[in-house]
Image (cartoon, rainbow, N blue to C red; front, side, top):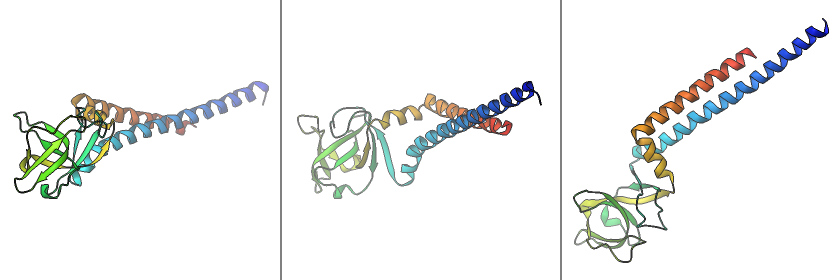
Length: 182
């Protein structure tokens, strides 16, 4: 074999090596994208299976304990078992029925109401919370994740998640093709 043949053979080996590395990078990146979407979707689905409600905190009334943008996990239970200083989620008594998360100052079992207060607020909430408005006790907060999951549950978030999965699958396909050529 002449010098030209050896050079072409060497160039082919380098090209195969580069294709193999590119294939591995594509496969790893594709798999990582799919895994990230699966993990984020799991954060949305799995807690509901185990009886948890999830909410995205949008006001600063509980700061610094619970920051704006946090994801909170709430578990139902008997309102009579709630103690002072527990943080609960409940429906507002106003017409909009928004969900509020505040700390319990007093649990009046006889009247079936909670007296609550936001940590960042100066005084107690003006209206007692009736037991029928009680959703559950806050058992876990994850700072900043609420924003991401709120985006994911929107129409555009679902489209983005589907596109990321398709991109991950495409990268895995490209990676497997590159490996075959090796």
